[in-house]
Amino acid sequence: MHQDQLEYPVAQLIRDRRTVRQFREDPVPQLLITKLLDIACWAPNHGFREPWRFIQYRGEARRTFAESVVATFSAEEKEKNGDRRLAYYMDIL
Image (cartoon, rainbow, N blue to C red):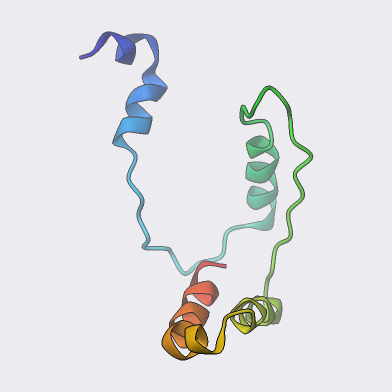
């Protein structure tokens, strides 16, 4: 075990972290989302607490948002990736 792992257990957590893009289907409770975002606002960044603002798109607003993003694509980009990107945005929102 490295010395920094003894002093900073979070260092090992960061090193071992992996992105997993398999999401559960059940919705995350609104209260949990609000609490997590509130905590995230306190993460260190340049010595300041930024005045973060969040917008959550739920229900039909998710599709409206995803379609609006895809609408900003060039005609070529829409032809090539539009359907795939729309599906991606609908899946992660």
